[in-house]
Length: 246
Length: 323
Image (cartoon, rainbow over all chains, first blue to last red; front, side, top):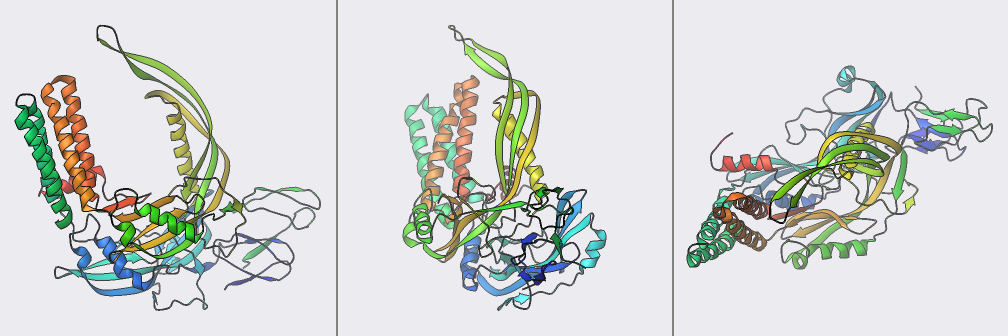
């Protein structure tokens, strides 16, 4: 815990992330916390459990855009880590602007668009127990960013957020997906995709038959009705097979 | 370097009472009115959680059997974990005002069956109060961006609530709010063709509100899905659930047949024929989307697996055409 003191009476109080004003419990003074010239270390703890990862992976891999059978891929490895980013709050001509910058060079997918996942942010200090997760140390210094950022500083922090790096094998090829350890969102640069072709063939056949059937029905009602009936059967039976197998 | 600043009345030195978010402080001793400058805070409020764990559990199970989800979902799904969270939202309350001029087109049919189109000029002055909300942190895979409900009991914010931190810029949120409110004002006029419009937003209140939700994760055949339940109203706000091939095939069977049969009406010719073709294709398109992407049912503000432009591009790619 970062312990701060009331500037009037000296009584200590505990600081929580996001706190800007605090009323001293002893003397009642309203205290303003000036964060413009310090850097806080924050951490977002994991809410996803390690044991949930295979099931979360299978949910993601069985999505409608992923190749059929991707959910049965073999998981090669799961790495659990706290990944660091810098968060700058700046005053830009009277407006509050937030910048998020990488604190560590990485090629992992999902980290290039840099956002801080939703979570219950806490102070990161000696009391915080990262458990079995690796805390990745920053290799990019904050100073390099401070020089180039516009505006005047209001707040800066190093935020560690939780993630799982899941490596899996599909049809003999290795792939990687990153799962945010707080909300469960999955990021990947590439995954084996599912083709829409079989879906379009069935849908198109059914639509085409019904179209021809209806156009004919004015002249030759029996054939038209038969074609429309066939369209319905092809749609349902073909659709069922495609939805299950492709 | 000083990290904390005690606030005192500049006139008498007495301590002043200051609510976070207020711009003016009144000294209780000498009654001096002081303007607060610098890094202004934002008024912060929290709503009381009304839904307990048991009720949230029941809400989840009744959600399982609604809609086009897997038919055995209620029977097979097992809730693995559920926990309450308070998500941060920017709330912008403002009065939207606007002048909108334009016309609506009205069709008349006389006794001989002739169709006349008439441009009916219309002008509206709109004055209405709006509340706009936006999630103040990244949405992740939670699927809630805007609040649907603002009724509820307000409680003091306490430090032991499971609060998710606001990480986005409040001024960006204000800009978005003003754009959205201006759009609402224009829509309120109900004018199809707008020839002139001017909209204003008069801010009334800006605050950060913490709103309670239950996050429920459940397992279905070895896959983990989730849903979020509004902690005040008990409604399901977002979620992911497995679909069912039966619904998918019924959708395409019915949609393609009905769509195709209606589109076949093009042989009737003229305006009716064209209209039939368009309606037929729209029905077909909607049923195809469900057929193709219905293996996972997504509710709430979660990005849909398709957008119409990307969709067309993907189809062409699947058939080997690149654009």
